Each structure stands twice: as structure tokens, then as C-alpha cells.
Length: 88
Image (cartoon, rainbow, N blue to C red):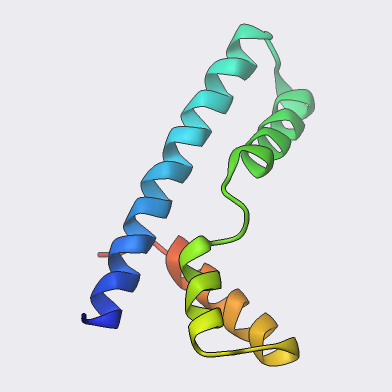
């Protein structure tokens, strides 16, 4: 399989999943009638808690490459940043 294609597909799934979590968190904030700093704080925590643990595709790739320590940390930061970046 083409690894770049797999990475793009996984990033797209993660992006759409993140948007779904954000919409759910926004509706919860509206139900609780939160505003201002309370709403911002709630949304940040809600989205962080609802998101899948790290980027599973990035973790899998790091494991395949047998990365550890600082190399794994650096790879994960770049991989997650690339996955979160809007494509287009």
C-alpha cells in the first residue's frame, strides 16, 4: 500500500472526527447556557476529553518505524501537526 495515501486518509478521518466532537461539545455548552470564559474553558476541556488518545495513525506509524524516546516525541508532534493541518 501507498503509505502517504494511508496517512492522508487517516488524517481526513481524524479531522472529521474532531469536527464531530467539536459540534457535540458546542451543543453541550449551549444546553448549559455557557458564555464567555466559562464557555471557552468548557469547550477546550470537552474537545480534549472527547478526542481519541493521540493520533492513532501516528502511533501506529511510530511503532512500525520502531521509534522511541526523543525521536518518537519529535515524530509524534510533526505527525499530529500534519494531521491537524487543513488540506487543500
